[in-house]
Length: 260
Image 1 (cartoon, helix red, strand yellow):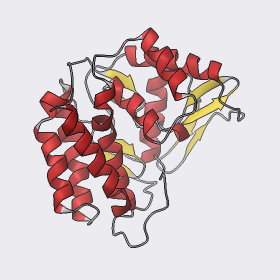
Image 2 (image 1 turned 90 degrees about the horizontal axis):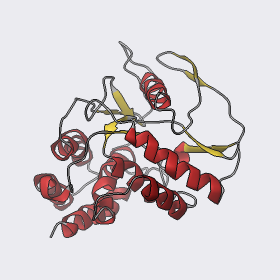
Image 3 (image 1 turned 135 degrees about the horizontal axis):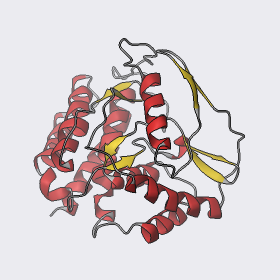
Image 4 (image 1 turned 90 degrees about the vertical axis):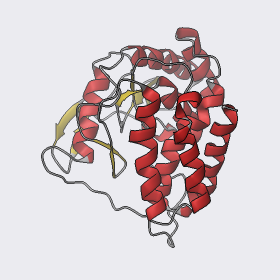
């Protein structure tokens, strides 16, 4: 995950990268685990992991290319196949990271409660504690967490998702889309699609059209996009401060309105 805008120098929330760790718990180790796990689905291509330690990840070098409508449509269908590969549970068996922040991967059997406990509440607390969100902002997100069961839509089994699928984590090479820098885990497939829309992916309409042809989504999925975007926006608030508070508020209000 990268900032959509520069960090606010007045913020107390900036987090420096944490390249190291112990016991295999580091951003680089987590990324390598995610790349290998996504590759097992043989759906969307990922670069080969050539080497990894606590501070360094070496992956296959791919020549840079450009997105096209045809490649976007192929990516949408391949993403549906990746999600369909599934996962044993929500979460993952390795310590997760998103950017430099630890990402809870404790296993869960149903998505709604797991999302509230593992994705919303921890980052809401951190953003509150560093002053990125006001009390009113916190109450809005708490209201989403309290109503998560009615806002989450129909239950779905865990999908094999990238977990941080903004446009900068798609590498266009050789006429195809490749996935890089994952926060991979068993999650809700709508999460990846919402993340594609958050900061704008090229040919997004083509991606979504091909995806929904291959794997139709549950009714009301567009209304749930803000719910799925709320976690990455909270992460940005934790990393870059109060400049993301207005987007957090807007996503929380939209999520609540969709459930009214």
